[in-house]
Length: 549
Image (cartoon, rainbow, N blue to C red):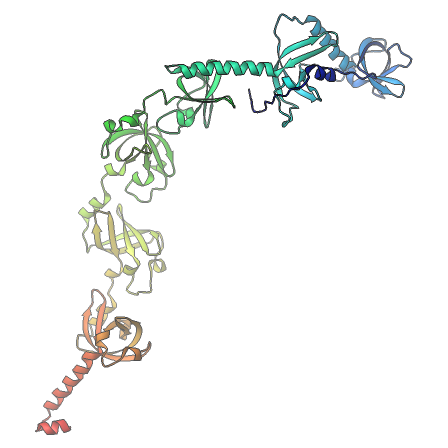
């Protein structure tokens, strides 16, 4: 029963009753008549009701469910005068039947018995409402309706108790308020008993919904919210109970205004989190049962009214787990390791992969830094590509993709490509493998080193200027660095991109693709070469001549 539409008014009951059953002089007279003529063409019958003018009635009121006329000319029947068409009375057989049924009901009414009826509100007037109960129309005063002016009650189904039968007027008065007040008293009595109970109360599951279930306790229904079923947290009640099951509950709240009773099943049992330190600790390996699978992870049942969460990243060492259901199924028993116990929020996190062999360990035992391996490109990012080698994914960074610094992995590779790479680092602690593609290719510096050596004089074009020096492009497209201190006698502000500069090679590291040159050393080398040339010239036989030369 709903209570939100309740409204009580102070209205004169007698005045309302009089208003409800006020009759118009032109109608509502019950008379006996004889059918004089039936005209199917006009869909009406003429009835002699013993007055100056014969009455008219629609044939629709004289037909059965199959449309056949149930009367013939000369038949007698009782009708009610409902109005006039000109001087001819208009009569109703339906209303007469209802009046006869009402009279029969009133005659058989036993005022020593209580009558509770169910009906539908069909009309309203100033004094109250008309309630249709199996064809009988009863009056329900507004003060006995518990219905607010703010709502439209037409069509509302109600229960009510008969409180007055007036045989003189042929009227019956019903009260919804009476039943509601009884229900309120009954509810409050039961609620009081439940609230004062020292032991859990036994109830019957009446209805299960997605947000909880309704339990009958002593004749009233209380709601067990899905968060009050288990200490695990919100659960689907349909997985644990069926309608008709007996359950032990405790009352946790009662909203007197709305008459809402809140019950709890988990309040009956002790909270396992109160003794969680005695049950488990981080690092423990335990057996659990998969209870629910979601795209982001799996919920597992530990027993003891405890539940833990297995995140999708903790299912396998494979970083490309698309959905947990590809690895686990509901009701499957598995071993997991406790990795987090959050007492404040009462949450547990577990890991499955921590109990599985690390692929990086097997990879480390079979491979070493410097080995050349083949793998398949699994994904490409802005910073490089991931290549799967056996059971391990290694990172091929953009800077290890090509000796051409302008080329990135996404420029030359696509997912699914098979590529040969060199292992340049294995980090077992963090399960990371670094790979290089360019390490298997001859670098521009290696090609350059095959035809050049330290001390050679070279010429290049200024490619870039930095705070620490400049880069020049030499033949074969290799770059060389001239540090700021090696630019003398050139001045930094005088150097521009595209400018040709001559220098001497001072450092070549072919493996790391690094070349350095020096203008400063070039000047010194030129001086040494000139001195050596002149010292070998026999025509110069004195220091003075040499200086002069």
